[in-house]
Length: 577
Image 1 (cartoon, rainbow, N blue to C red):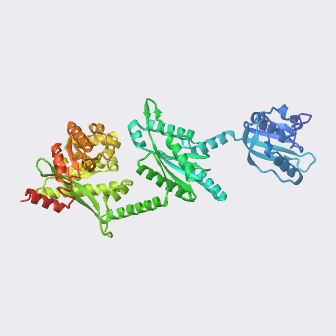
Image 2 (cartoon, rainbow, N blue to C red):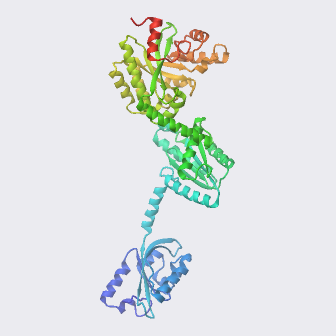
Image 3 (tube, rainbow, N blue to C red):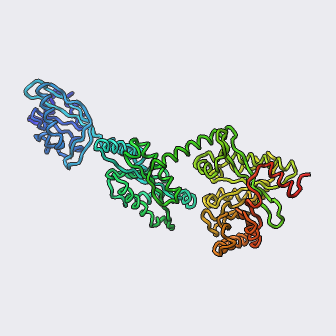
């Protein structure tokens, strides 16, 4: 059947009714372009969909060459060659997805199939059937965009970041060059999110991503890694000096506040930097090491940057080793509680004691200091499991003392991660009741940082505990935010002043003024004052002169075992019969 149209008489008049119906059918197909070409690639047939898809009217297309109509310039020579090989050698052009060109020059995605009629004659005719894939292409592009783009910030996501890093590593390896990776984490973002809500938290992330994008002029990729973490890969940066300049620029981005509706939010960032190939040749190593450096920047006070170093790597390995030992020690029961008395200055009697955790691994000669293992535990869920152990042991000890006629409060230290557990306060209640204790028998000690970071739900739960009679202390006051204005917001009963305030207070006028101010404000807020680190009689007398209620320190007792507490009470106050 010949579909030749570029000749007289008209095509429809040359065929029978079946052929005419077929021609009418393909001519009317929507989004299916059918074009016919002679052996010189001149158009002999051009249906209505071809007009719609490519923009050339039938009268414009007839007689024109295929390569002059819809073939992009870079494809022309290959199309001519393929067409000629089909005519000369019978090698059919395979069906394929192609990007052709409209009259306007705009690209159009099609699936193109080809058939040759009157093959082997002097007048072969090639017919192209092109299906418009524009809609499918747009959908595919959108899906690819969604798969590689963070939908909140419109930045590349982790998937695209990993693809980019793979390519960057290949290029740097081939060219024997390097690049820098910056791991950027927002400081105190959780607090902003909890205070203002997730809607404004999301708006802040969008604002941060835009400002970071605007301030970066170096070649590379800025991606949102997840949560409040961003990663920038600077592909043309090879030295630490250049990297430091970029890190300073990134830090400068946060000097101005972020306007969110009616609020102006100030936020900073901590940045860790790893260098390829010095700090790793694999994606995971580069990201992990930059992350380690970022946490070191946070540990040094936030709002700064830190390069990854092998000394830092060794420190991290040691921390991981300690974390692994902590897991084992929980199973092997290698922890113990010591108790440090808190003395009522008016009566000279033991009013309560603080339970202090000690870790004594069986394969170690001595206990591991708390300042070594507690920060490691707090960076994971370990602190929650350890906290559960402390609560259980403290309640059990308080029960045993009660059975011996000793009624003193046991204060336990509670971390922020414990409070964030939904079941913590229920677990506290259940543990007290199981050991026959009243709310007043177990006190809670929280740092001011933990209280400031606590959301409304935690504060309400603490208020409920306080209403039941639980004594709640702010521990180590002066080592965190040290803001007296926060005190009135928290449901606390005791203010424990850190030892650093007492050390020079009796002799030094400046330190003495600070101590007096804290004590006076605490009393104005109806708080009981506990001074830590009392080591000399002079310091004790000074605390008495300020009307401090309670003291704690080596002058009275170091942390001692539960049996030693009983002996201390028996010796001093003849409590036991």
